[in-house]
Image (cartoon, rainbow, N blue to C red; front, side):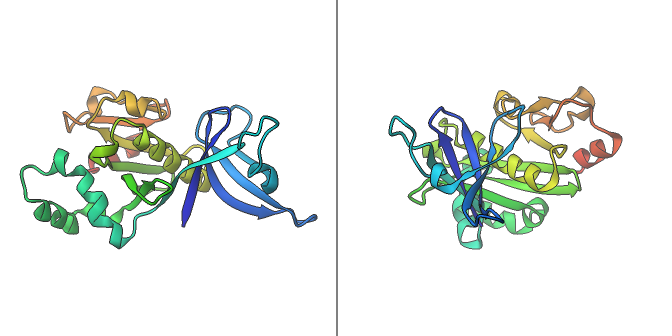
Length: 224
């Protein structure tokens, strides 16, 4: 399945969740979700004609900016290579790609990618299911030519909101940051205490604000 990401003419970004019919009028509505904090609601609906229409100034209300989808086998060589310069450890590219065939996290994860409207794949990440209510984020990487443009942050927000839509707002995420943690702090993560920092220089982080439970801490230990 493919999800479209939109930018409202006022600047906020949204994840398109699909269309639905009004049960009485049989008119189509777009269902979409905020990629930012909104105290009123995260999920919204709008008549499809209005969603795809223009405002009084002639501006498109919602502009498509990218698409998100689950990585398919034919995409893997492309997206896995995005992390080669950071994690290749001097191996030939072919050996680096082959190593994923034995990677437990890669084999059990669900990987998502972000592509531009012309089909160019720009970044990807892996999601790891620990238990209901707890999900790991791993292997966030962007194609070298597209780094520094906010694509990884956009993909991360979209994946998190999609998972929350399916599982609930209390869903917690874990990750290890190998870049400036501010990237993840802007997506609702915080740096965990020293007792959880076992894989330095990678920085252990979690979403939300409450301390990890003992069980969550055990899952974090087994992350790698």
